[in-house]
Structures are given as structure tokens and as C-alpha cells.
Image (cartoon, rainbow, N blue to C red; front, side, top):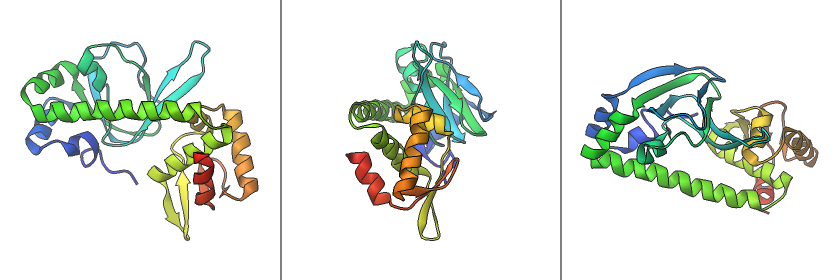
Amino acid sequence: MTANGLEAGFLARIGEADRQAVLGVGRRRPMASGEVLFREGDDAYEVLIVLSGIVKIWVASASGRVVILDVLDPGSVMGEMSVVDGGARSASASALEDGELFVVPATRLRSLLETHPGITIELLRVVTERLRGASRRQLEFSAGDALGHLCRAIVQLADRYAQEADGVREVLLPMAQGDVGAWGGLSREAVVKGLKALRRLGWVEGEGRRLRLLDEAALLDRAQA
């Protein structure tokens, strides 16, 4: 179960005075499942903080293939790099479920960075963490095979969303199988084929978005192979 965005992530990691300063210059707004929040190349007028719901960050190649760069939970910040460098959106963002955002105009946040060093330091940490994560995922994509990539995606999603059920961890995937593939660098067909293989091996069971992890040790070993 994910925490509320006011209790996790960026807003929770800054001091109370800094937090109230940020809350004082923004507004809440709802987001609907499937809504495109912004697109790659758009001018960046706002910084978005996820209060509830889940968001995917993605890019599309010239051929139209979608690659999911990250999946963001409550507390996550979007658009922070544009505040730092003033550039356009470097990726697109879409809501995976209904939720709520906190929207801060980029100019107002930029002004706060000049007077609130605690906000500045924490925002730089966010940027650094995201760059480190991107470098790690690039390395993961360059190694292993399709089944290994799928196992890695399942393990990562389970670490974030799995719950105990009758002594076995069960994960309700926050995205469709096609998106799981886009996050793991795979096609939807490769995900379908891989899940069939994992069921035959007895490592997982379930259909659709719900998976029971019957042999997590095997999944982890295959993910790291």
C-alpha cells in the first residue's frame, strides 16, 4: 500500500517551514486513469508532485515503440529537471490510476529555491537519485535475456506493491502487461510468452494483473543471471 504524497517522498523529506512554503504556492488537482499529464518536448510551466495514484514516465522512439523510464508512487516529483535547467519536458507522463496531484508553477518554485536552501538541497537529491536510477536501468537493459528482464520487472514491482496472502506474496501489477514490457524493455508478446514460461516453471500463478509469487528465490536468481 502506497503512502499519501504528503507523508512520503519529497514533501516529507523537507523541513516543516520549507514544506509549508511549497504548499503555499501550489494547488491540488485530480488526475484520471489514462490521462496524459504532459508530453515530451512540451514547455515546462509546472512541477507536479504525486499525492495519490501511480504515474508512468515514458518516451516514444521514432518507430513508435514506447519505453517506460520509471513508475512513480505518491510523494514523487515530476518536472524537477526543467526547474533546474529551464528546458522542455524530457519525457511524457501518464496516470496509471485515478489520483491527485499537487501542482506548483515552475517560476514560483524557482523563487523558493533562491530563498530556501533546504528545498534546493532536497530537489538536487531528487535529480541525483533519478539520474542514478536511469544509469542502473541502462545497465540492466544491456545485460540478460528477455525472461531475465521480465523476472527483474516482476521482482521490482513486487518490492513496491506486493502484499502477503495465505503465506505467499501477491502483487497486483499497477500496469497492463504491455506496460510491464515497456518498463522491462520487452514487447507485450515477450511478456505474455515469459509469463507462460514462469507459470510452467511453477514460479508464479495468476492471470491478468494479479500474480502470486510462488518461488521468489528463483525469480530473483533469474533476474540477476
